[in-house]
Amino acid sequence: MASISTWFRYMAHKLEYSLTLSLKSHRREKLSDRELIQIVCKNLFYGKITFLHSDKGREMAPTMGAHENTLLIRKIPMANTRYLFIGDAVVLKDPNNSDKYLVRRLAAVEGVEMVSGDEKEEPFVLEKDQCWVIAENQELKAKEAYDSRTFGPVSTADIVGRAIYCLRTAVDHGPVRNSNTAMGQDSPILAVELDVDEMAKNHKA
Image (cartoon, rainbow, N blue to C red):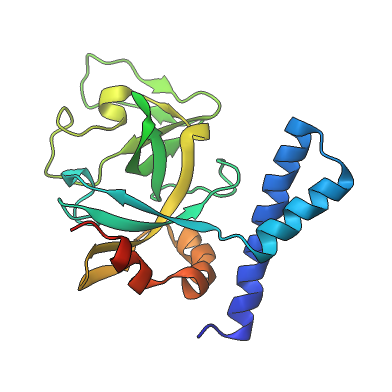
């Protein structure tokens, strides 16, 4: 059971998420103050800031198994450097199929100069709101890995969350290694919202 201090940290994250999401809706839909407060309260007291996602593939080994994995994903209210950090395992829309989602490591963000190991390729700088994501499996060659090395930079707006826990099988599961900053932020969320039994029930063997 989570301690009182962990609950306070967790509720602070939920409040920040609820406010950020509600203000985005307020700007887009021009909600009344009453509607805005109702949305904030609904998200704060009834909503979760995680969701389950199934994924498979050798690109993210060893964090993920080659077969089906059930992941606990922390929702990101706004895809920017306040919430995302280099090294994080992020969930993003497939740039070639927006109905599908990928899990990849965040390798670089806007303003970073990208230099290829191939001398024939010119260096370039990631533009505003662009990022570079890579597969984790170092045994894969660049052409085999479905990541930014094959499809190029992606929009940070396509990132929907960060993987914080992975269930590979009923007896093989644990927290996902992310940046130190992210893991510190996510620890109270894991303490409160992680339900391994629920993940196991949703797991597709």
